[in-house]
Image (cartoon, rainbow, N blue to C red; front, side, top):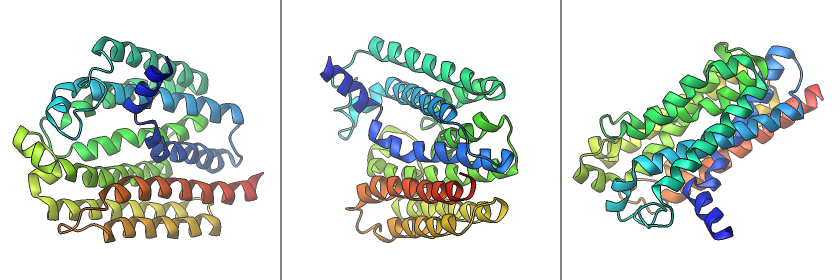
Length: 290
């Protein structure tokens, strides 16, 4: 049983929760402060965690299910649960249904407006898994989908979306798009051979890295604008400077001639960025409003 649970956790890349979960909490805390001038309740934080875990698990399950035949051809992904025979497709389908059930339940406990927006989230979660079959903008679609988690955190505690929430959403959408371009560089040749769409397979390695840099410039600009338009103060400013430094460093250690540090740039740098920015934002707002 524990081995099976481990297989499910590996399938959904539970360690990648470090990317989105801190920002989901940041969206909830910042939204509550901006709109209501106080911190969200522990109950809201708990339901947000559950909603995000359900949505993220369903999304990864869908992606693994729809890509099972592609994964079986790719030497990098042939060891994934379905092509390796560790999980049967029906088991993954049941896992997806259960995950969506958790997502629906948690969202219903949070806010009626957030619950009414569920069809948009579900569409994006399903739609993304097919985009690499017809557009090299699949990375941007992934960003717009993943950034629904922090936006959802904001909406869950406020019941509304304003321009500040949208700035936060766009900054994080292009953050995800940027590091997904970096991640896709390792499949450039395979995607080209299989007729799959990605920025690396469409434009080549050098231009792909410039796309990633451009996306992260948008992210940095969004972080800066957020500082200007919200009550965030110097604690956030320090975290933002560190986060922008991390963005710069992950591109500094990559070049078309040397991609050996791709995993460091993709996982280590970006998981650190999300934790750092959330931590400094949390301290900033707790000091001010607790």
